[in-house]
Amino acid sequence: MSTLLEKHIVELLHERNDKAISLLYEHYGDTLYGVAFKVVRDSELAQDVLQESFVKIWKKSDSYDSSKAKLFTWLFRITRNTAIDKLRSVNTKSDKEIQIDVSDVYNLGIDSIRPEFMDVKENMEKIEHKYHVVLDALFFQGMTQQEASDELNIPLGTIKSRLKIGLRELKKIYGNSMILLPLLTLMS
Image 1: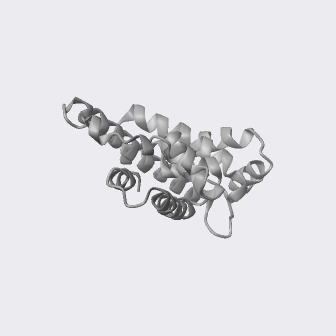
Image 2: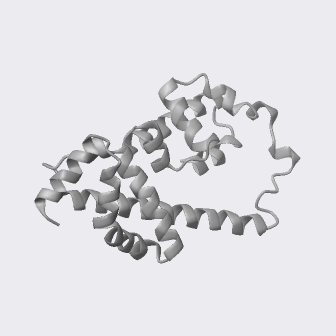
């Protein structure tokens, strides 16, 4: 691709011009599909990854800095990371589906359910808002850490830090209860 065309696409991206996505798809779509397919090894999943990647590219278009990376490198990273996240998500989902069939996985028994821990969501209100938002996104809205990072516009590393601190704050509220400890380890 010519440097002139690449600069034109970058300008369109920064202007939030819809034509940028069309040009990106036209000039990079097949290659980025190949990147996605190499990671997920499934054509339908690779198509999903490509679509999600273009959405992320559009949302993050103002963050592209040509002094840090070439346009293709930036596109490649977004697509590859999206494919990895998708693969993890699919694997996690299939692991959960398998566990549902195991008869004693969710058999907590009545003694395991303690009324004082049924208020986790309400007690989250007691922790600092920045931790509450992250915990809510991850555990009550079902987002992955990457999805929470994208949705909340917070760097992934910050999401991970706030998750740990938020869980530590909840642990202070509940003490060293045996029922919450497995929950916290599953969440982290």
